[in-house]
Length: 483
Image (cartoon, rainbow, N blue to C red; front, side, top):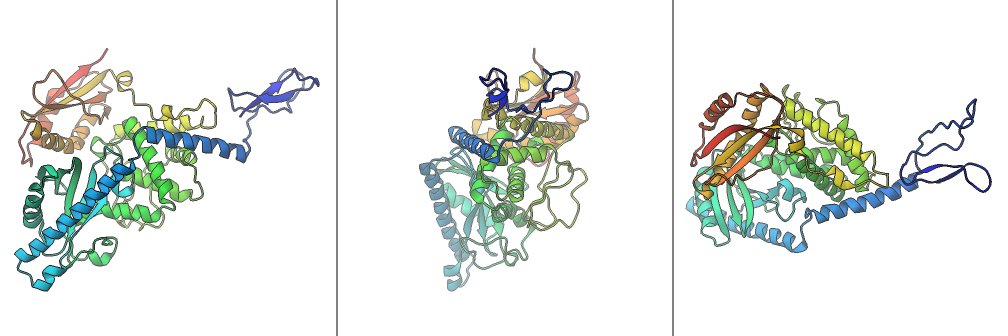
C-alpha cells in the first residue's frame, strides 16, 4: 500500500492517506526552505511484514495461474504415467531374461538378470503436465547390446503389444533411441549398457562403480538422468524448485526463448538456472519472491561467467570459447550444458531477462498482473520480414522423422543466417493449408532488408543430405514480408 500527503485533515496538519495508484511513499517531513509548497518525495521500503503479505498473495495467484494453464497434472494423469513406467519396467525385465537365454548364459545368471527404466527430463524432475512426453532410459547389463538386443529384440517385443503404437528407431541421432507411444503417451527411450551382470531397479547412476568401462554412447544416454538426479540432490527444497521451474519454463516458451535446437535454452539449462536461485536463497519459500530473484539475478548476470551449482563438481576446464552463456552440467566435472546460442539469440535472451526484471519491479503494486510476464511474444509486431521454412512429406507418418532431422540441423542454418542478419527463430510449428501434402512451417524473424535465400537454401540442402536414413521430404526457404 502507498500513501500521499493530504492537506485537508481536520487538524490542519498534513497527513498520510492511502494511495492505491502508486507505491512511491511521500516523506511527510517535507522541506520548506524558500518554497513552502515545494515537496521532495523520497522512496523508502515497506515494512517487511507488509511485503511478506503481498508476496504471499502474489504467490497464491501465480500458483493458481500455473494450475489454470494446465501445467500441473491431475492425480488420474499422474497415476496413468506411473502405470506406464511400471509396465515398461516389467517389459524390459522379460526382455533381459530373454536376452540372457539367447546368449546361453548359465541358468542362475538368467534368473538373476535384470534391467530397468529410469526417467529424466520434465517427468524425471516432476515438472511435467498432461501433454508432456516421457523421457525414459533403458539401462541394461553387459551382455545386452544396443544394435541387436535393444533395437531388434526389445523393439520387436514392444511392437507386438497392443498398447504400443507409432514405434520406430532413431539410430543416427547423437543419442540413439526408440520413439513410440504407450497408451497414447509419447516415449523417447535411449539405451545405456553398464558393465555389470545385473542392474538394480533404482540403480544409482551417480555411483562411479556403475560407470566403469561404459562406452561413449551409453555415457551420453546417461547424461540426462545423471543431471536430473544431481539437481534434485543439490536443491534445498524440491517442491519449491519444481514450482519455480514450472514458472520459468512457461515464461521461456511464451517469450520464444525455449528450444535448444533454435539457439535458445533447453530444459536442462532452465533447470540448472532455477536450481541455482533456490540454492542461493534457501530460506525463501514464497514463489513470487523466487521468481523476482530469478529475473533480478539473470538480468544482470555477467555472461560469459558460468553458472555453477554449489556442491557440484568444479569444472576442470574452461567452457568452450564460443559458449556465450555457459551453464555447467552438474553431474560432470568437465561438461557444460550443450548450447547452440548465437549472437542473435543471446541478445534476445538478455532482452527477455531484462523485460522480466522490469515487470517484476511492479510486484508490490496493486495493478500487478502475472499475465503480463507470460504474455506471448509479439513476433508480427516486432518483425516485418520472416524466413519461412516449409517442410513436407507425401505421407503423414513420414513427416515426423523428416521434421526431426531438419530441426537437428537448424543450429547450422542459424550460423549461416547470422552472417547476413539478426535472426530470431520462432520455435512454434505452423501448418500451411495451401500445401496439399502434410507439412510443418516455421517463421523466423529477420532484421534485414535483403537476404540471399537461394544461397542459404542451397547450402542448407547440402547439410540435410548427409546421414538421414529415413524418407527424405521437401524443404524450401522463402522470404515473407508482412504489412
